[in-house]
Amino acid sequence: MTEQTSPGGLAERIASALPQTQCTRCGYDDCAFYAQAVTCGAAGINQCPPGGSEGIARLAALTGRPVEPLNAANGSEGPRRVAFIDEAWCIGCTLCLVVCPTDAIIGTNKRMHGVVEPYCTGCELCIPVCPVDCIELETVTGEHTGWAAWSPDQAAMARDRYEFHRVRKARDATAHADKLEKKAEMKLADLAAHSQHTDPLILDKKRLVIEAALARARAKRAGGD
Image: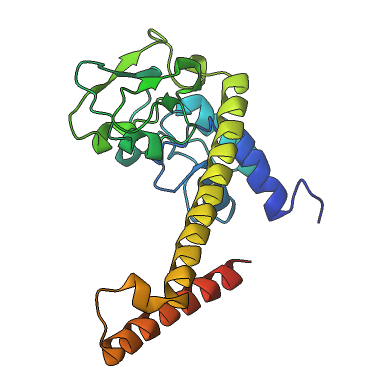
């Protein structure tokens, strides 16, 4: 079995044929998961609205499956839209920063956010999380839809930015876990000084709770490694 015909090789070629918007409209967590699902036959080749009809034709050529219309349950093909944030309404909640797959939104807590247009894939994931509805989508490609509204270079950049986004989130999660673990260890080392209680029985119960939490965290980390 060659790399071109192996499941892994086919999944990579399918992923490379996707627009990499990471919009999840295909029903999967990201473009890579959708590519894997198509490879193993769990998903149809017609579930990517951003790719549109040309995207379906590309996947048909790669998989040998017949071309079929875009599945309406996944959405419709349309022009590319970019998110814009209304400065007057933004409260700086940072919820949109968390969900943006390409880190196209910039800003900090309680400060107005903005969108770096070239990095925005129009995934729309920021829309439902905004508590004040200050994010709007504006069409930037006129009547051009699907791959006519999106280039291979843009797809490649979106994929690279998404990979960096995933690495950054994993790194931040590890750093946060380390911080919590060190805090728990410090508290455990001198529990009496970090508690309002003086009853030895209560302190012993709290010690057991903290030790159990630390044990779970370490086991989870070991399992992840």
